[in-house]
Image: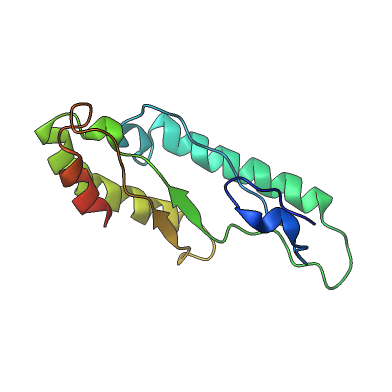
Length: 137
């Protein structure tokens, strides 16, 4: 398979011996509370993952060299909506840790790396971004 440029940079110029897929579950403008276990967006993420794995399994050839489809990492890019108040920014770290623990518990294997991207944004729009960023690092 060949990946295209964009989030993958120049991967489109190289051939890849395995299929790589991205499972979109992002919803812009959300707060970390919406991603907690048993919340709607956490359940949405799990459903997207299950759907992607199911589709991948039906598309994988039956040759012995074909590895089964798996989730090998989670890319987390969220937090700007929690940087608008001191209270939300202060609670972000514990809630992020809960999300990470629950996400890993729902995966096989349980040690799936979670890549956390630090938030950006202008201080006038996200005045407590330093608090959220500290929790993300």
